[in-house]
Image (cartoon, rainbow, N blue to C red; front, side, top):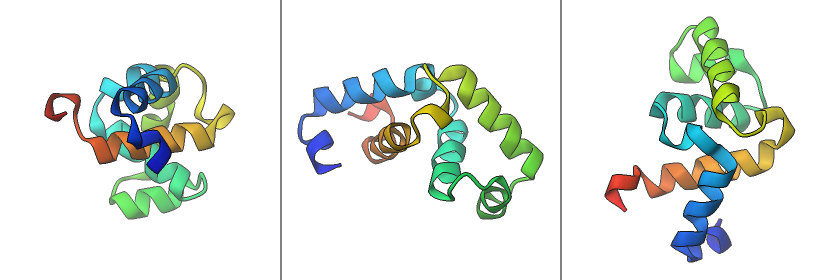
Length: 95
């Protein structure tokens, strides 16, 4: 993460290339996917952590896959890194 965040412009490019439309979508979607990856892809644990019904989690994850350039299952490490960078950077308007 330190290497990715050292160059802010490059970090933003990485986020945009990796997350695509998810980067600017509802923050609850990014939080759900980040938590899902952190919880080793266990929707029940995500639902418990986020105090949200499991069906809502599954629906959000489906929406995330629609917004991502490639499915989360195809690049969980890269997508997870981009999601954590996005969370640390905050909304683009605050940069």
